[in-house]
Structure formats: structure tokens, C-alpha cells
Amino acid sequence: MGSTTTGTARTTADRFVRGLRWFLSVPVRRETYRRLAYLLVAFPLGLLYFVGLVVGLSIGIGLSVILVGIPILAFVVGVALLVAQFERWLVSLLLPVDIDARRELEGERRRDRALDLATDLRTWTPLVYLPSVFLLGTASFTLLTTGLSTALAMLLVPLYYDQPGLYVGIVTDRAPEFHQTVYLAWNQLLVGFEAVVTVGYWEITTLPQALAVAVGGIVLGLLTLHALNALAGLFARYARLLLADGYDPTALIGSAR
Image 1 (spheres, helix red, strand yellow):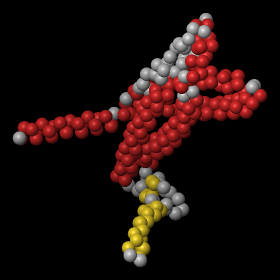
Image 2 (image 1 turned 90 degrees about the vertical axis):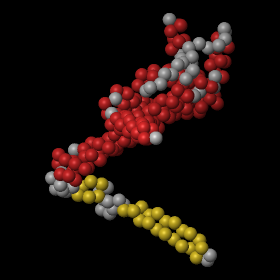
Image 3 (image 1 turned 45 degrees about the vertical axis):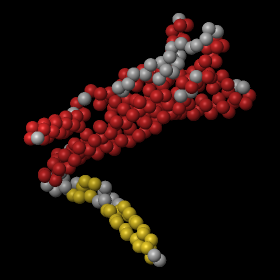
């Protein structure tokens, strides 16, 4: 019984050490910065995808009543397929997922291949995926700028904690308040309970306080990096779901050569 208890405690301690090592090693892992690189480029690329699709589809749908918009819509879909192939390459390069594309269309005649392309669901999923890159870029850019910049500012507090007027927290004319209210009906009475939580700030005046804030900045930075890694991992699975087995138009360009 004693040896079993000792073995269980040792296993738990080993798991704790491995988990702590995994948590602390996120800034020195190569895949962290590969994922950060993708999240950083997702914002400008997503904005470009979103604007291009909205403008192209709006013009194509608006002019489709006079048949001029049909070739415009076909051009937009073709460009979307090319961009989707670029996204497959970019995601496979920077995120931990491989996304394979279908390089051939079924059918011997050109008409049959065009029909296969038009009726394949994977032809249209890039029109959903590409605008969503803008949402990912916006979320990751916000998390990156707020989380890491705040963590860096907290980490540097010991360097200038002795400067007058240094505060940590939400500094406003009036501290923000959060009101939580619960009402319970009892017979003919309505009983209410209200809790007020005030979020304020404190002034840093000593080195131990500054070091405590710096440690908090380190923890916040690690948590932010883990959150960004998790966000990138979720989007990698999402990209594989929508882009896997889609048609690769570069195969047509290569065969034309």
C-alpha cells in the first residue's frame, strides 16, 4: 500500500512538473512564433480578402440581371480558389496542420469538368473561409496588442517604479463598478440582493510592489501566448475543415504550360 501511494504521488509530481515546464516554455518554442506570424499576417490578409470578396460579389450579383455579372462572379470564384490555395500553403507552413488539395476534376470533356467544379461543395467553401480570416485577424490582433503590451508594461515597472504618479490598474476619474443583482420572490415579497464590485488601481511606491507587478506581467504574457497558440490551433482545424480536398487551380495553370 505504501509503495502504491508513493508511486501515485511521484506520478502526480511528474505530471505537475511536465505541465509547469510546458507552461513556462511557451516563449522559447519555435511553433509559438510560427503561429504568431500567421496571426499577425491574418489581419491585413483577412481585410484584403473581405474587401475583395464583398466588392466583387456585390458587383457581380448587381450586374447579373443583365448577364454581365455572370463572368464577373466566375472570375471572383476563380480568384477565391487561387487565394484558397495560397491559404493552404500558408497554413501548412505556419500552423501545425497539413491541408491537401484536389488537383484534378472528374470528366473527360471540358463541359463535364466545369460541371464537376460548379457542383462541388468545396468550390464554394472558400467564399466562407476567406472572410473569416478577417475575423481571426481582428481577434488575434486585439489580443496580441492588449495582452502582450500590458504584460510588457507590467514587466518593466521595476525599472521606473520610483517615478511619481505611477499607477497600475484602470485609471479613470471614477473607478468602474460592476453591479450584480439577484431578486427572489417569496409570498408577496420581492427580496433583492445587490453586490457591487469596484475595479480600481493602486500606486506603486516600493520595489517589492514593483517586482510583484513584474511577476504578474510575466504570468499575463505567458497566458496571452498560450491563448494565441490555442486560437491558432483552433483556426488550423477550421481551415482544414473548409479547405481540405478543394480544387487547386494552379494544377490547371501547370497543365496549360
